[in-house]
Length: 159
Image 1 (cartoon, rainbow, N blue to C red):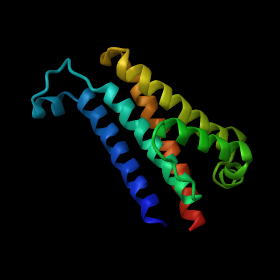
Image 2: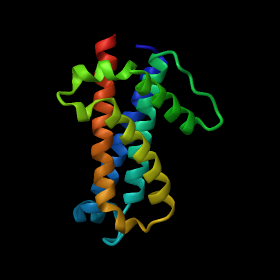
Image 3: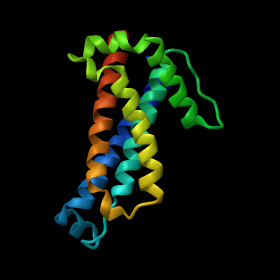
Image 4: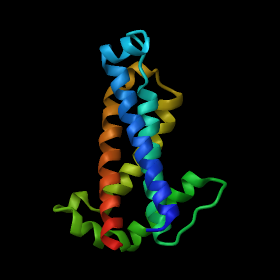
């Protein structure tokens, strides 16, 4: 596997780890006490943001594995557009068919996860009070887990 692909996968894993840790800090009273954080304080916006970035870096790793390099500016939009092109072309469907058992969890599900997480990152990071975001934070972590797992399996099987 290419070193740049590995770098993005490593960043994706780091972001996923941070999302999980921020959720733990936000929901676990003992952790808050140890860290000296008031019990009312939460970091759900950070969970959503880190989960999005884990998906973003995973998508970039996959694109790089297909020799698709994304340049600035508009890196996030370009990454999404290129990922969508691969799904629409059917290049990703065949691989995902081998991974998932049902039609609903194939490539279209991954595209929807990436799109929804990108949209949520903007909405919930900048526009909503953190305390209201617990269900969305949990959903973001689950979506990131699914996305990362599927793409990593594809990359491992293509090596």
